[in-house]
Length: 145
Image (cartoon, rainbow, N blue to C red; front, side):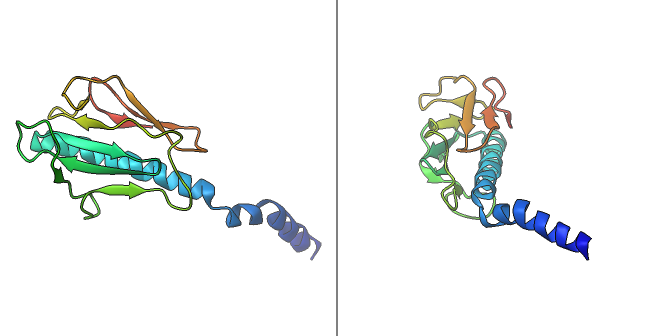
């Protein structure tokens, strides 16, 4: 009986506060969804040999694609992996990016480029209250934490 009381007390002190504070879960969700969306964008650019544009706000990211392979402007919403048009991720429960990430594109080789098609340095995104960052490598477009 004493053991049960001690265990219940310990749980109420350490576990209960975490169960009622979902901000860490929402931040992790935005990080995972953004990582997934960027990987999808890069793979789509390579598979279709078209430019895929990634646009950001403080708490969301969305995808568009060029209508023709030779175009550098993204004028068509890109269907996302979950079927939404355009493919979008949004922070829930106040989850957001630390700063609004710079919009960028993936070219037909999957590399990050600017709107004119010039290569970019590695892109780094961070979610507020998260220690890890999302990195898009400059030369390959590889997306990772």
